[in-house]
Length: 422
Image (cartoon, rainbow, N blue to C red):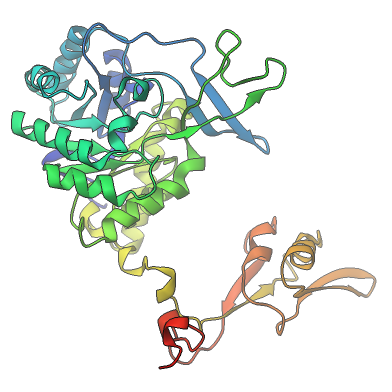
């Protein structure tokens, strides 16, 4: 069996699956249930200074699509609303009873060095394995000049990270906001400040839906609504890109990354790992299906690693990065053609409609022996993949690579304006 043990920025855990800092990690009862279910660690819900924040009711909005529940989750809950001393005592208790698990504490206090100096020794005393600096919360706390209000300003990211590293020896993970144009700016700022690792992505600013009776964004709180943080399967593509950007950039290459954003299955986990993540933080999937979902993720990841011949998590991390390139490095000579498996085809015609109306008119609608039939017109097909994506039958339409001679990238192409006159 593959060895799933994780060694991440000085933090050890029996597997890379951690619960993210969120409602599921807000109290000892939940965390103990999670660790009993097999999670490798948790990031305790963000602690702040006393007095605690005050949360509202309701707090969650959902994006459901085509019969699928919680494709995305919108959250307007703030950091923990429980007293600091209570949280610290519970963290200490959990770490004492689960010494092999990663117990990381998320922190957010005002952008004042003295505030960080006060809270860091209190967290150290619990025996926690590390801290995560929450520079990403996009609602509520950002209006108080914390959360994403810090994470969107690289100079602040660097400054606060440096304060923290000067006042604690605990491994420090900086949690990055996706609500920014260039994720590399806060990532490199965190590295300059001395961060031991980064985690991303935090939630995305969003209005998940509008109540057309109340005429207010959802969730509705006393007739009013606000923007919140968007998470769940719908944000996974955004998260994968940002994780990969940090992993492949020479300025941050080698910086440990904890991947977050829509991880719900072992396949999601594997994709984050090969794009550069070393640990995996999960929230929405646990809120949707319960803590035991980790069993399937552990089993699935382990079996996949065995099949691929990967012995450890380190063997997997970053495997796809050499193949994650800018568009101008792609081979313009490469070509695929769609191929329809007529035995699997259910004659629904979606491929034809999509191609005829919105693409390249490369699928013919025929009638053979009185039966509908759809065939690819090879000379018109540009290999765009749309037909394969709209087809409701798995593997009915496949994209077949064609023979190719040589490589031609855009910098080499005669139509590139940069080559005019050469």
